[in-house]
Amino acid sequence: MAGASSSTWRNWAGNVTSRPAREVSPASVEELAEAVTRAAAEGLTVKPVGTGHSFTATAATEGLLVRPDLLTGIRGIDRAAGTVTVEAGTPLKRLNLALAREGLSLTNMGDIMEQTVAGATSTGTHGTGRDSASIAAQIRALELVTADGSILKCSEKENPEVFAAARIGLGALGVITAVTLAVEPVFLLTAREEPMAFDRVTAEFDELFAENEHFEFYWFPHTGNCNTKRNNRSAGPAAPAGRVSSWIEDEFLSNGVFQLACSLGRAVPGTIPAIAKLSSRALSARTYTDIPYEVFTSPRRVRFVEMEYALPREAAMEALREVKAMVERSPLRVSFPVEVRTAPADDISLSTASGRESAYIAVHLYKGTPYQAYFTAVEQIMTAHGGRPHWGKVHTRDAEYLAGVYPRFGEFTALRDRLDPERVFANAYLRRVLGD
Image (cartoon, rainbow, N blue to C red; front, top):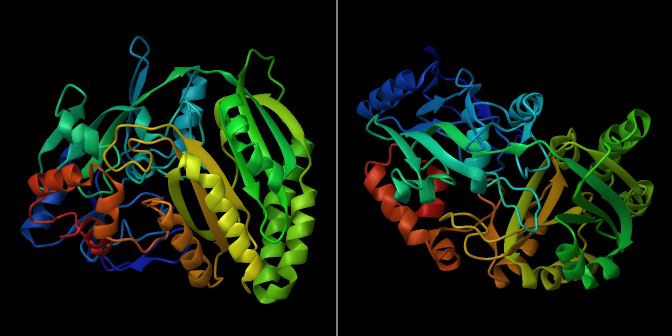
């Protein structure tokens, strides 16, 4: 087992750092269990870390930092059951490519695929969907190393109370070592991207949601403009986005030009409204048909900080209109679009969609831009509507608030008391959001 000491860890956005006492990269589940047991005996806390795509300090530790770099790859595919079992440290990108080679796919996924499987599921990473939910909701079984070094296998039939919670466990219940996900034969999606006015999108949101398997849109602050995206299953034939047009949309405009625009906006905030008007008109309508990960995901090379709240779906458009009105009457200058997605209700204890149909409103600001005033104003709107913050994105909520918006919050904390009474997996973030 490779080890190192006293190195500084930083997340992807650079807004969180920590200095663990020691790092390990176990090559097997047994090595990981031994490392957890040893750390606990030494009085060190233990935190696994993926690729650092969370904007919160979920993975920060001054104790033992577990890197899952060697716990990667597919353990097995069960075509009859429609599942794949994958090591926890496997990047989603590698999983998607491997599944495509096998003629398989996840049903739904988020819009980036740089995270590890365990990191994405543990924080509730999601895409958008009328009927299909977060990646964690697609879990059929998982393997967990607990605080005493035990290796626990969980599913609806085996340790079901742990399974109900650990699919989105925040690293608070143990270290996930493997995940079994539902998969299906690879299929085609037709994506239809189209500019649309803010007033029309918000007025027709319920219809757009109901008529499409996957609907999302982006509103450009300081404008009345949105860009919509509808993804629906298709019988084919495949018609991928053209190489040149795809490069212009996804790389040149969405990353290259946008990077320059954000840099200019950070240096001269007064230019942001004019830049927003130009940016919102630059993306044109397009339609293409491809396999799921080519449609659901896109490159994100411009670094940012993000806050996202899940609301009851029926409250989302009112909340978004309130955000727009707040931006318009404030001196804020917002360079990033606001993203809106949906999810059906699920049965995971700490899922942001637990027990209710949800819509997500995500706000972003360019890395290095002061974000507190904007995020605080948005958060006040979200919490007034009973919003649940994304576990991996910036927020200020604590256990008292969260217990009021999660009906099964007490189930999770009781299970944590049983599995980790000494708080081997605790850190400052978990003490705030779960209590101690």
